Image 1: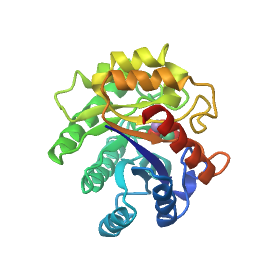
Image 2: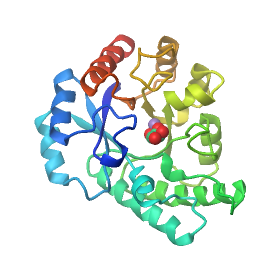
Image 3: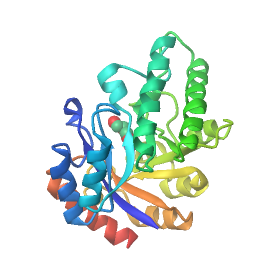
Image 4: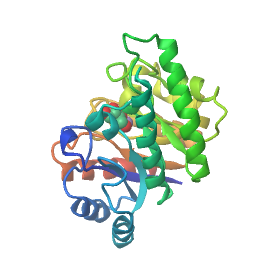
Length: 271
Ligand code: LER
Ligand code: MN
C-alpha cells in the first residue's frame, strides 16, 4: 500500500524551506487530518523538541501516523555533518542522528539523512568524504536496524551536495556497506534535476527505495510544475513500492492550498 504524508517543519530558521506546514504542530496536524492525509513527516530542531507522549496522543487524536523524521536541523542549526573534516563534529553529527533515529523509532518511523551528509570540503578529497559518509551510514544503519526501523539516505541535487546526486550513486554506496538498515529516498525534485529519466531510475533502483518526497519540477506541490507524474506513479507501482509519498514541497501559494493540491494529486495518481 502507498500512503500519503504532509511535511511539518517546527524549525523557525527554515520556514522558507519546502515544507507544507510550518506553524504550530497541532494546528498543522488538524489540517492534515481534515484533508485526509495518512501521515505527517516532521522536521524538528532536535530529538528532544517534541514530547513523545504528547505526539503519540496527537497522532491518535488526529488519526495520523508518523511517516519519517528529518535530521536537517543538525546542519542548519548546529553546523553538523557526517563528512566534516573535524572528527568531533562528525561524531556530534552521528549522535544527533542517533537521537533522531530513537525518536522516530518510538513511532516506527525512519529518520532521513539529507543535508547532514554534507559536502566534500576543500580540506579533503571526495574519496575521503565518501569514506566518512560510509562510516557514518554503516554505524547509523545498524542502529536503525536494532530499533526496527530503516535509516533513509537521500541523494540531493548538485546545488545542495557534491557527494551523491542520483539514486544510482546512492545505491552504489549503500550496497557496499555491511549494514542492511539503509534505504534510499527518491525525492522527485532532486531527481528532476539530476536523473536522466525519472521512471527508469525508479525502476532500476526500486529495490532500494524506502521513502518518496513528492514535489513538482519547481518544488511546488505536484500539479503546479511540469513533471509528468503519471509515468512516475506507474513506475512506483511497477516496483511494488510500499511506503509513504510525502509532500516535501513549498507551501505555495499557502500551506492550506498546497496541502489540498497535494492530496488531490495523491488521490489522482495513487488511489
Ligand atoms: C531534505 O529532504 C531535502 O530534500 C533537502 O533538499 C532539504 O533542503
Ligand atoms: Mn527531500
